[in-house]
Image 1 (cartoon, rainbow, N blue to C red):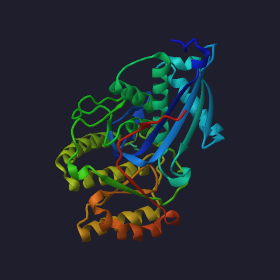
Image 2: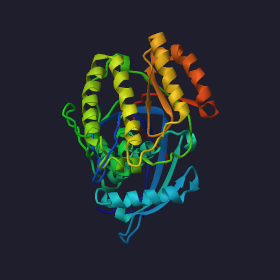
Image 3: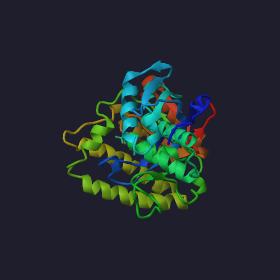
Image 4: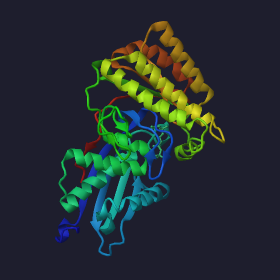
Length: 356
Ligand code: DP6
């Protein structure tokens, strides 16, 4: 496998835009090389994405990859270091990297401090660019399904949740008996059509605190090793995923809400009961949750909440309820950092761009 002998053809470009996601069934706990302790499922978002462009050139010593990384126009050594070690860890799956010099430019369309998980969009965009480069440079022709599967596999090694962002809609990552073709090493799209009530799910992200979280996700995953409730949690996630599949097929928002909230609170319960235990919710996250539950009781709305590994609250509701829930969201902005709420919606997945 070598670059083309034609000197002018020895430069290749790849550019992808890839979205963030919010998990409905949470991935929390892993082993080995990014193997999840339970299957997870998420909504791929539309508006919050990373755009990554790679210019790849040839080096002849085979000691690559050599990397220069710019984040939002600036050389970024902290991110660059993480990307370099990620690239080294995937060389055996992408051997062309040994002969490559990569100039990587990346940027998010949401502020870095918005409290939106950026590793999912960043690592999926990077994995898609690398797989596109492999295809161009080596002439490898696999078809779209195998291409996306490999991109998801590579993204997983960068960050587990990133492997789901390779697909639009509601993908599943992790082996689960009710999802045909599901695998611990890559995500798969759902094999059935969502019931129409789930065809346009809105996600309004209430930014309670945009700051860096006190305990990283990788530390949190690690604390699941030897956790007193680990086995029960993995069983709960498995049965929640089974029930969620039925709800998504049947258009059952009540069950969707029940499971989504159960997963969010269980995730945070795992953090609180880790050793040492810790809290990522803030007092304002709790106020918001109480008010959402109260609003739902009073109005009969379908709105529900979920949480990432942080204090920000995601509000999920059908697009048809956008006007109904607006007064609630306006009221809740008081509990947000500088009144920030970001509107997003379920999206159709990454896009390859022509950006030479
Ligand atoms: C709570 O994917 O960030 O968001 O694999 O260590 O990069 P690493 O972890 P990461 O964990 C995400 C945890 C979560 C739930 C989820 O997205 O499923």
